[in-house]
Length: 258
Image (cartoon, rainbow, N blue to C red):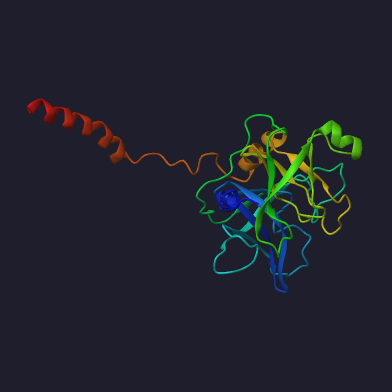
């Protein structure tokens, strides 16, 4: 594990779940793709009918933390809106169903940077890692080196595999069962690990949603959630623009007099 790599990604990673009167439910990991959005494997609106009537439920997101735990070091925001490919309370872990979702936070995720969506097809021959918590509530954030398989190679092992999938082979079995962790190849966001919670069925071989192939779905649903593409890109204030125009003229005038 390279500590420098983990440190550089720490501000882009999050874990999320629900707070109920009976206590918190930690659901999985996610990657920050916008100051108001997390890309993960699942997540539907708090008002969905899965909760018992009268149950007080709110969503939480913890980020910029080495441990997926409530602590003074972890930053926290709330969420109530989300869109998932599987509009159900719990994601189906069948290999024929892709797992991908966007969670919209109520407050901005004050992160130093967000993870941009890929603009080109993934290079699966590159160095690829998954960043996440091996066991969600126990381990610290880690970089896990993986081998990415092509769709054709993966389908030989999983015949019902959905067509926008990637497979990763982890040398240590039964990790990241909760799901939502980003697969990163040569520094580019490549996939989102699917959940297999609570069973470790396929040991070392895990499925990911291919983010490049889902990028249109992501952009469309960011808009449906009311999230603009460039909210972190703030325009220059008027006085800055004027200053840039005036200062060179003043300097030139001063040099001319000399």
